[in-house]
Amino acid sequence: MRIAYFTHSLQSCWNHGNAHFLRGVLSELVARGHDVRVFEPEGAWSLANLLADHGPEGLAAWRAAYPELRSTVYPADADPAALTDGADLVIVHEWNDHDLVARIGRLPRRFTLLFHDTHHRAVSAPEEMRAYDLSGYDGVLAFGETLAEVYRRWGWGDRAFVWHEAADTRRFRPPAREGAREGLIWIGNWGEGERTREIEDYLLRPAREAGMSLDIHGVRYPDEAKRMLRRYGARYHGWLPNARTPELFARHFATIHVPRRYYTRLLPGIPTIRPFEAMACGIPLISAPWSDSEGLFRPGEDYLVAETGTDVARHLRDLAADPERVRALVASGLETIRARHSCGHRADELLAIHARIAGSAASRHPTHHPSEAAA
Image 1: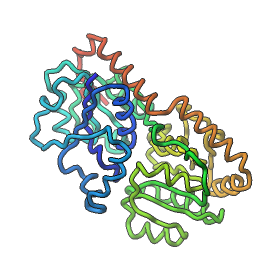
Image 2 (image 1 turned 90 degrees about the vertical axis):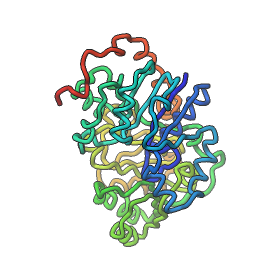
Image 3 (image 1 turned 135 degrees about the horizontal axis):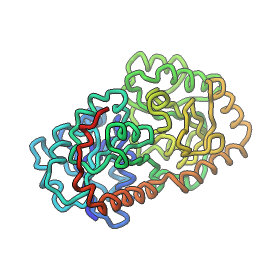
Image 4 (image 1 turned 60 degrees about the vertical axis):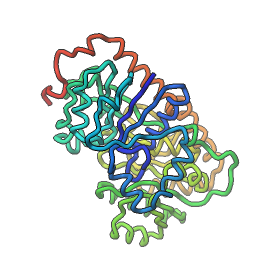
């Protein structure tokens, strides 16, 4: 099958978490023999920031890890009909320009067309998402049930599909040989300050209370944030190429899941990709308050739950004193990822969604435009 994916960037994961999952699932599809073509716009902000900060060498890690993947950079005046020519399945990510989304939707076509939403804007900035013209699309891929439900309220019904992110287990896996592990690692971007208090309460203070070193990787940390990290003795390292994450996880004792408030209050049940990657790499994971309302994992077995920062510090001390508990936690999390949450599983799901839509003549000729439905 020929698949075309329109992304913000395949090359850059600078403040662009979708690149993690995209690389993994497309790599899986390529390995299965599918013809995968990726398109990203000229001047993408993620790639521009990466190159400004790190130069062309900043792309080395992803190129080395994913030699089978490449992307075509297209100009603003590119003809979407030419880009999608011969495709059986076209997927357009929600970080694309509104005009491009609409132009692809208006193409005379014989391919299945899906919109892929992996962000909280449907609830944090719904007017931005409602501005997309999706009237020509066959369905929406939402990265969690609560987000899919938003689209169902907007008129998509059973054409709003849940398609969770997952771990690229071809590359995100435990080290072949265990070495020395020390301290905590946290990989996350600062964002717009929507989890400042949570970072302090569930990461910085517990690490200090447990007497563990803390290494932090991410971007968009303002000077005030860096000063806070220094007050707690944390070491800030800036951007980390996601392809290097497994090797850094292998050097550290544990990591913490600190979800953004949007994923605890407005879109509960969506974990984002970080917990998938951590469990796949075999590093103990402790989570700040977050509701696994979809039953993706086994709380208390795959990862430890902390209701307070004091709980985080207690879990860290307990794990440090109990190597058997660490081994059991790691084994349980890894078992769940391999059984349910690899990019291979998501490839299966995507192909099943495509087969369902392609096999339905009615979905080719909708009687109404979902984007025009009442909120």
